[in-house]
Length: 319
Image 1 (cartoon, rainbow, N blue to C red):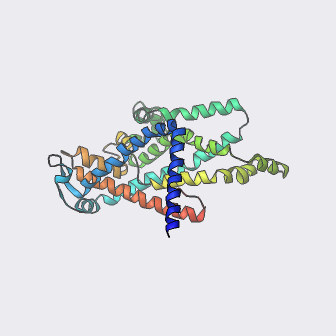
Image 2 (image 1 turned 45 degrees about the horizontal axis):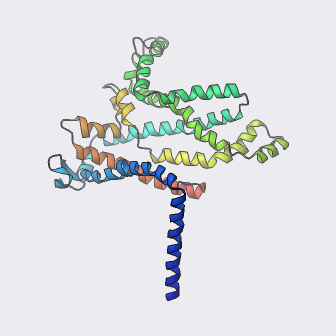
Image 3 (image 1 turned 120 degrees about the vertical axis):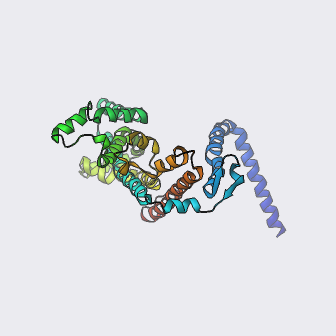
């Protein structure tokens, strides 16, 4: 027993010595990661202290700890809201619609880039597809308003002409909101999203490609049987990340595109939380925090579930 204790102590000292030598040798690298660690601690972990206001009747004068503890009162109020299922339905409809397009389209585009042999054409198209990513959300929504405006918008006037005046204002149509929101996002980010798949495609085995050529495989067959299996782990990981944030529909773009006429389709959980916490009256911070906490909790459950299923089915997971 004593020998075992001494052995463990020796191993611990040896491990500490190893870490000390590594730190002395690569201290510049440790200094470089210090700033991201501090950033995460300040902006990701410290704010978790404020989550408890979702369980309190928060008053800024009393502070977080001085505010009355009310348990699940704000959650029950949200669940009993007559518009609860509408907010859930709108959020899921937009998010699922977005996932159904934003996952496969970058893969398809990346495979097209990989197949093209003309470097000038390939680089030009890649450059053009990346550019919209750098357009801010405010500018993007401004472009949508200019294009689809009922009076001066080119596409809006064209749709009105085609429908013989039946379509008066696309921007105020509840049925058109989801299409405008999702497809404008696809246009903005599809090119940028191909970068990770292009990086994964660089690891395609040349031996497998040459073997497929010898066997007489066409370009399409090589994509199906060589390229896609190579990037399959990356595809699964990206899908897990998208599904894990299924209720995370950002409020910025929605609020900018929202108006009284399309509110039935555009009001989602994040916008309701924002309006409740900051815009209605003096702001019910506890109610808004409870809605946000519920949103994050459901996303966590979904992420854990799909990650476990993916690990069993595809043998690929986030952890």
